[in-house]
Image 1 (cartoon, rainbow, N blue to C red):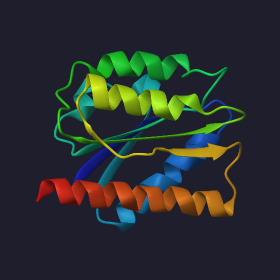
Image 2 (tube, helix red, strand yellow):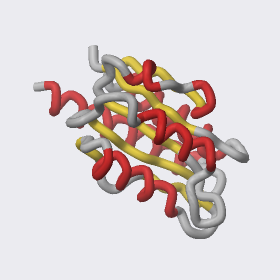
Image 3 (cartoon, one colour):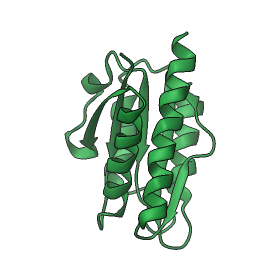
Amino acid sequence: MPRAIIVYDTRSGNTGMMAKAIEEGMKEAGVEVLSKRTVSATANDLAGIDAVVLGAPTYHHDLIASMKTFLFEMEKANLKGKVGAAFGSYGWSGESVQMMTDTMRHIFEMNVIEAGLKILRRPGESSLRQCQEFGRKVAEKIKMTRR
């Protein structure tokens, strides 16, 4: 069975809501998913996975510190060719999703999903459906790369 990890952090709960909905979509599509907050995730959690999905809100046009720290932790794992995807909530700008995507593509040489998923503020019902669909999209990418 394909395996993925969602590593995220959240300040006001919005990105956390997104993470749960993305996880639901991935599980519905037949992917085994582990979800962890950035502060408890390590490079060891990335062993044997097919995809890494990162989630963080944009805070003052930047990634939050805990995600920056986790990106340094990710350097310890060999992720070349693995599927990568990014998501996050934002209030006015949303740069964090592209920052995570660029890091996965250029530093870790991952097979990233463009574009990542950005949701303005608190996700409502239709936004959560978008998140589930994003999870299914990640699952399909995993299955295609495993062939």
